[in-house]
Amino acid sequence: MNTRNRIIKFSNLFFIILILFSTKIFAQEYEGLVALDGYKTKVYFSQRNDERANFIAVRMDNVLDFYNAIIDFEPAVTMLILNSVDWPKFTDFPVYGMAHYMGNKTLVIASENNDFWGSFIPPLDQLPVELADKIKSTYVDENGNLTMQPFFDLLAIHELGHAYHFQAELRMQRKWMGELFCNILLHTYIAEKEPEQLSALTVFPQMVIAGGKEGYKYTHLNDIEERYDEIGQQHPQNYGWFQCRWHSSAADIYDEGGTDTFIKLWHALSNQHVKLNDEELATFLSEQVHQGVADVLLKWDE
Image (cartoon, rainbow, N blue to C red; front, side, top):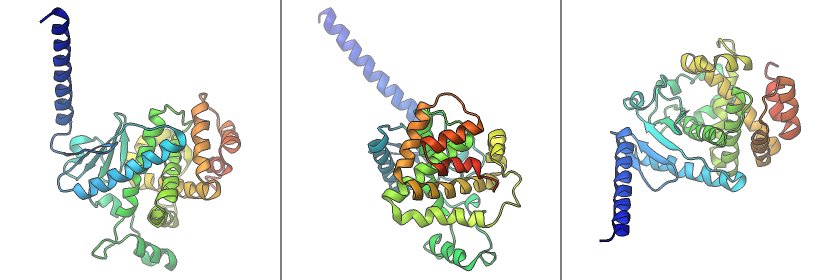
């Protein structure tokens, strides 16, 4: 064997060893979870959640295809679908059931109903009859019990939204803008591709907002800028109230501007690299995106 062939053989062997080593390390990182292959998103899930994992993986591929077609960008994501036992093994986030996106391009969601989801169910007899009827018809399991899972399942798309703006290195200007961006992305996809899920997406925010804000410690947008981690981790229901306000705004924004609003928001944030003050930001959003987006800042406390 000549020198050139020895070098080629050694290079190929080294490459194979590197692949095997990398695969082993990656598998060990999620040891105990089941790997789901065949999708754009790398998926790992807790045992006995095969059907749920496949369903969510299909939806995530559909979201990626939808947005790749209109903004020509596709993030890389690993998704973990975890039961309450596996949750603390793979994420430090303290609230089981609160979907979140981690800096290593990993999206984490719960695999089962939980106390956090249930904590948002209000006494239905204290709500307007029409809203109570919507809740009972929208959020019910096969046994006829109320469950918020239909809403929280959709939040995987919201968390995927964070992968878009982080990996594309958009300057979001404000923490609340990063959340609103994800909710516009979520609502736009559902309205365009899964309109049968609109009730599951919109009734929950209506329910939370209808309960008022008196019981929450933080209600101003500046609270999110100053205490984002504290609110999310120590006051999860309070954080949920903020999210519901942004969900409601995202619905109005889509209804008024359609898919074009998200496209304009994407390009506007992609091209704005300097941080703006509040007055500049409101003008920027109004002129380059949509007045409804600017109004989240301008009319939040009304």
